[in-house]
Image 1: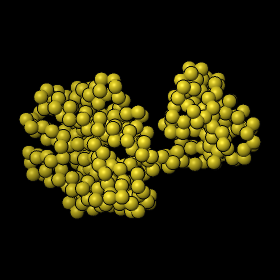
Image 2: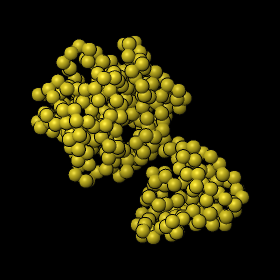
Image 3: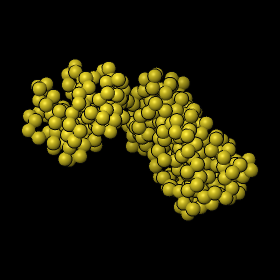
Image 4: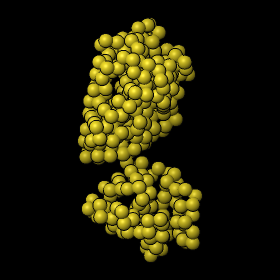
Length: 342
């Protein structure tokens, strides 16, 4: 297949290097990495599977068009989500070839992870797990009285390992009612004894992501382990329901099942407990170079689960103006089922 890529992670997957101004072209047996003078030296150092070409910094597509015309190809695949109307028009105008829309075809290629990728992902997960522990210790000893904004600031620093790692996404640190928002922004809510704390965070290691969520009860023995004891029976019931839902989904992970069946396993537990309308997202998503990849572990996903897929299992219950609970782990699909990372 002849194809063109612009997404940084998609390009990196093809040739081991990418930057914020590059085009990757696969034309027959040849591949080309087109960038500008700021990146060509480094590109040539890291790329051995494509020819590095220097183009006009303001119009790399001019070089791409010349290569496409010279190649004599009849069709070119592209992911429409990578292209603005303007960029697509500049690429395709006057080129007499068929442009084939292939949504997310790079993520489809990346859905089954190579063993080398799995090793990197495992290391990323371990870094993430360690950061959860260190942040938990910080909250236990020094967190009383700080607000979400300061907690978020401290979490970012700890998960970056003081600049040694990147972040998969900006951490979500939410207390009590703010935790009922799945993608909560930090507020001035202060951490007090008896506060529910939700932390969703991850790191990037060698460009690959980790992703993890824990919900915990803040007291003198505070920690982010899954075994939690809350101060009232209702919160405990909600927490235990989410935990049981995650356990059911993890048990449902098997080669050959459909992704929607894993989602159903979690959703059934939450439905039976009476909280079905408060589980407002899918049970999981793929993780790799992107924090959200394929497969989608959702109610309508017909994807067949295969060995070496990597995805999250993260059921949640979100009660507006009260609190929210989410428990998330990233897993590898093995012959024996789900293997937890970190």
